Amino acid sequence: MKKINLLAIMLLCGLTAFSQAVKDRSVIPVAVNLNQVLRLSITNGGNIEFVFNTIDDYKNGLSADGATPGAGIYKTDFTVASSTRWKLTYGAEQTTFIGTDNPTNTLTLNNVGFKLVNNGINTFEAAGSLIGATPAASLFSTPTKNASQVSALMVYPEDLIADNNTINANAGDAADNSFTLNWRAGTAETSTVALHSLNAVKLIDQKPSPRPDRYVVNVLFDLVME
Image 1 (tube, one colour):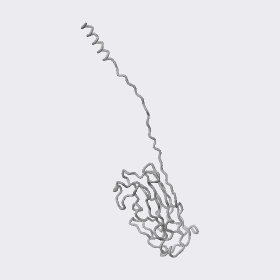
Image 2 (spheres, rainbow, N blue to C red):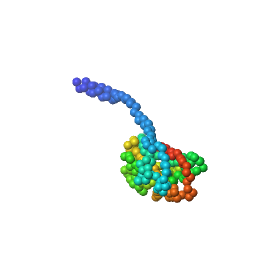
Image 3 (cartoon, rainbow, N blue to C red):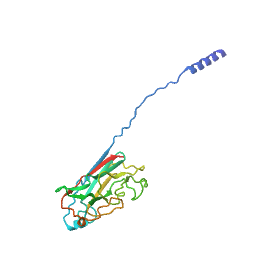
């Protein structure tokens, strides 16, 4: 009886030693396809035209802000929808305004400028702070000192709005990135940002006097991925 038990134990050990674990494997491919969304929409004010009709216009200028003639008229509203960090570059296509009646007539760009107004959820850094200094901020604008000062119109390309280089990217929809440009002409407003002050001399006092004409320039806006 003992021999039979010993033989059974030996057979069982032998089977265990030579058996292999049974397993199976399946594979499920998983992919994440990120398609770029990058859209600039000008919703109002796609054509701005200042008309100087009175001496007061020449003395004080015309502006979308304050109590000057045309307040509330000279505005451009735009939104940015982007799935990634973005930068908005802008600027005049030529170095001066060109007369349409007489192309030899020119008007310097710095007679026209704008104030940038933020209407969206994404915020600018505090004026004057260094890039990345305000953790909650998503936006940065050198020409306008983070939407706190007026900037003269500049020649293309000029970085108008950029990402703040913090963990809070400026990506978002139109509700996150909504802006207004309050345009002005002949207001002689100054800025602490070098080269971005408007012409310090009002139109009525400039020498030589600007010749009567309709002066035009195309202002380009390019939205790119950061």
